[in-house]
Image 1 (tube, rainbow, N blue to C red):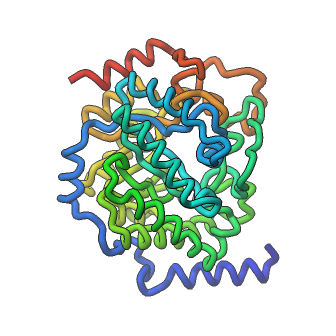
Image 2 (cartoon, rainbow, N blue to C red; image 1 turned 120 degrees about the vertical axis):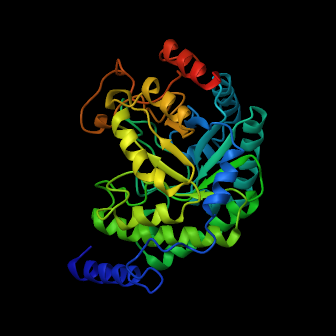
Length: 375
């Protein structure tokens, strides 16, 4: 991007961010947000929600999970069954806008098949519609093989960076949001809609700065909430805070916006239990249900042993990253992108189960079961 184009781009972004609706105050909510009372009533009718960020071991990313040629319902059913045996009752699952463009009717059919299998195991799904993390240039078709020993080497962003950075092209996602949410808006098998995972997250392949991606991410996120509110699903809407300051004078605009517009508050935390308690303490005053939609990185001091009892005692929903260690290879740590690994790490970063169904750590699995089922 040359200097003139970059200047025009930034000017346009800032103009839109200063629109009279946002008016420099992203705490203004999009009309239709649930009241605290409605959110509390909804949550009172839920069990303690515990599960994972689920991708079948046979898929390297969202596209491979859902495309018709690689939609592996047999593996999905087997692995959902393993999670149900551990007592899990929900999973967080990623979709992708390109799948809608490819074949919207086929995608709806496969989602319905997936939900039928999940329902068989009494598992309800939180769908994530877009994601700002990893490869910014997704392509339909045959997906690459995993890079040996590299964490999540084939995961893709949604939408494509060329869509995200073009304010007008962003609007092409309206049909995807309204189509998916509209079809399942009253389906009890769908628990929550997570509109955008980690908006503003970036990597060196994005071609824009962190500030630029946060700015355009906020514009995109605002549109997503408007589209979803127009559908008015029976399930709550959310977008999860994950980095930087969440509340107070140093909170970022995008974090203020997410907290001000989510029906239930979701958040990520790959850190110690003490830091987790600090983070939770900062968002408790909102009075809304809390769900931790990403945690558990063993070598980052984020563990089931310490975090699950805390979440259960406080009825905080719990979704760790990863279940079966498969093609996404998230048993390897983030640092595997910079540091060469030639074998599986002795201490897994994420994930719980091997592809053959055996546990990475049987004592850990026994602990998870005991915490979930104990009264």
